[in-house]
Image 1 (cartoon, rainbow, N blue to C red):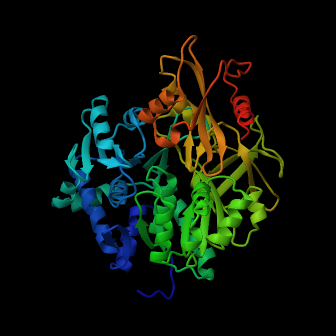
Image 2: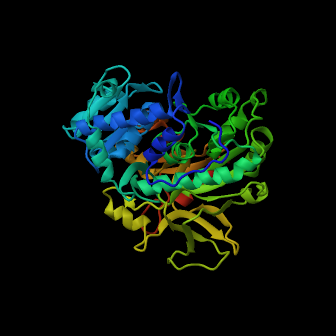
Image 3: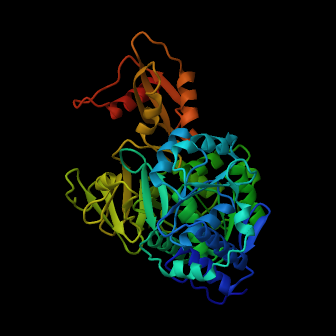
Length: 538
């Protein structure tokens, strides 16, 4: 279909965009994963069919549906079908382990759980089967792939439900302010938090990013209906909103990849003549570290988007010279909005390296406050707080945690330090809380410490982030054994591998006679981190 003009409508729900584009161009190749593919019309019908299946299983507005699958074709079907009847999708990472699932699944108390047999060598089906006695006995399990545990997913797509009228009624009861997605995130402090995003949060974030990309990219030659890879995990805002949502809203083609791999990305750029890619700094750093990067042709790229944290000059110049000449930097969080700021094409790399993260997107606000929550003058550094259409209403079933992150008048604390200039340019300077950011993931020290302290020979443990050229930070732990006990590093590492996602597993265990303590008798993490960096000359 040839477009003389191309206009992106502003709709309330992500699933509505699929139906919108299907009505305009039903044969458009909307989404593909390996040999599986749907044109726009087929994708819309598959979503409707699965939504009827959910209704037949008794799923109602406000119910939660958990997925433990990577970025494969079944995920967007489940996500959008659930949302279209008011159910809340809760994607969990395939790298989660028993401690993660035992904490997260009971918290959201799902009606349905969709899982894959194995991923990245891990036997997820067997793990969930063994843990299922700890969960609500009424949960229904569906297996994607080999029937190892639960009902085969394919059975849901084979039946004729005849519930089209019930589907219309369910959709007529939806509100843009209803919950649509739960992402587990490190937040700014405490235990992992269940961030609840509404339909409005998701659709508006996707709309703002889609229109901004068109505004900046089309004058440079970006096709209005471009192709884009989605290889982020569903459990990451990047996978479910920034890429999935943005591309659906823009009516573009999504190419799914089960997981991120630098060579798979480079091959896809050539195969599909991709014009746009997005990623966190770690992803670009890994690509630039490849010894044979020069053998891959990336000349089709018009824009590369980088988001997630402060970026170095070396990384930016490497991206410009070896991957893509035009770079957009963005900033956001699951709570404040996946992207609340964007830089512009042509902004100097020197400014980006100084921490420049752009200006606010429409309908978003920022204020900078000191430690007493008083707003500071323009140009002074303080904690960045955000408020707007992208700010989530709060955490799911976590009222006390809401008080920590959100103010009574709706501002979201980012936990990041920054400042703003007279002309609205925003710069990030660092973090307040000791969250460990491993690539695009946030890891709370307590998640790692809670596992290690179970070891009978361990008296004290503290986890900190240590700088890393590729991942920005990696997890290190300092351990104090019980008096007279001997422990080796491999014991601690193996214990963590059994209980935690691999990005939470410590890269190094350092044994100490004691840990630095604050005057309030808490572990002094800043001092410990500094000691380790100096001790190992990092």
